[in-house]
Length: 226
Image (tube, rainbow, N blue to C red; front, side, top):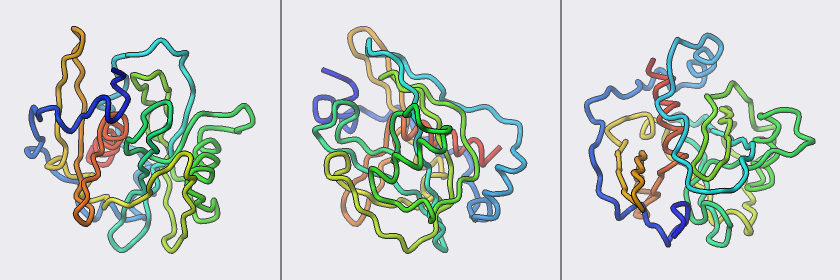
């Protein structure tokens, strides 16, 4: 029963240990494009909260990048995808667009931009990379660099049906409010796993953001609130 799979393992059924409603939300003024640019230009002293998950696979580590695409609406959003059920890793999960690095990629940002275009057809001309968050190592042995970018709204997506079942946006304000950050704990074959989840109701449909994606968003929260 791979922990990275859905529906073989359904994180939605794992009880919530606690919700971090006692922590302050990031104010709207810090979520504006100019404030995000300034934060990455002059970053504070801070530490990521989640960096390395407990390993649950014997596969060889692989370098990867994802795009944390902040869409510059009046109230900014983050672009996320739902992975197709037939993918070999993290099938059916909510994820940032992105994937494994190619030898031809110049750097982590190039990987994120290439993979985002391949997955959802987002034109690079709409994207302004503003920085990166600390590397995040998943339990499935992906060494991920989250690349943060501002995206001009008005784009048209063309999701790759082999990889992406759906693409959608979640308000950045929702994701940067710890009252929406759930902590879950699961015991499996003597191993204890803990993760964050951020269930979001999207016009009557639950978008269950959890695991690595939620962990990187939690680090983004810590970066912006530091």
